[in-house]
Length: 190
Image 1: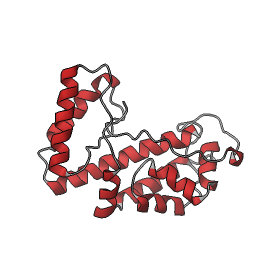
Image 2: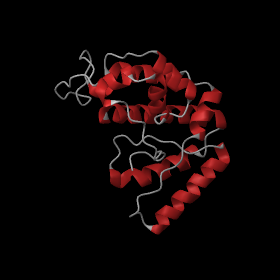
Image 3: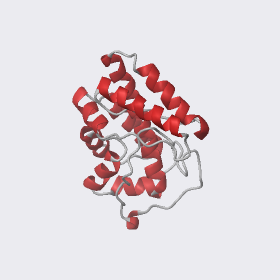
Image 4: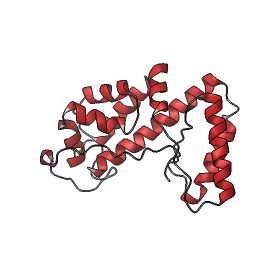
C-alpha cells in the first residue's frame, strides 16, 4: 500500500506506435531535467486529448485539473509535466477539490494487518468522512511499508482536530502530492 486512497482503475493505454527513443535511465526512469522525453512522456504528449485526460483523471479526479495539464502539452521532461501538474493542483478551487476528493476511495489495509488494526482503521476513516464529508487522503511517499498503517492512523487522528478550512488546505496538499506520485508512475509505466 503506497497511499491510503488509491483507485484500482488503470489509466487507459496510450498507443504504442507513438514511442520516442528511450534514453539511459536517470532520475525519473530515463527523464531528468533537460533530457528529451522518453517513450512514456512522448506517448502522453502526442495522445489524443481524451486519452491524456483519462490518464490524468486516474491521478487526480478534477476534470479542470486534467484539462489544464492536457492543454499545456507537450512537456519536454517529466519534471516539466510535474511542475505543470503541481501548478494546476495549487489552483484547484473548492468545487474542483470537492470533485477530486469525491473520486477518492480509501485503500483497504494490507491483508496481513491484524484484525484490531483493520477495525481501528475502518472506524477512523468513518469518523473522518463523517466530519469532513470526503475520503481521507494522504501521501505515504518515503514511509516504509511496515509503518504505513500506523502513519495513516496517526494522521487521521491528528487531522480530525482540524477546522474544516484547515483540513481543506491539508487535503488539497495531500491530493496534489498523490497526483504527482500517480502521474510519475503512470508516465514511467508507459
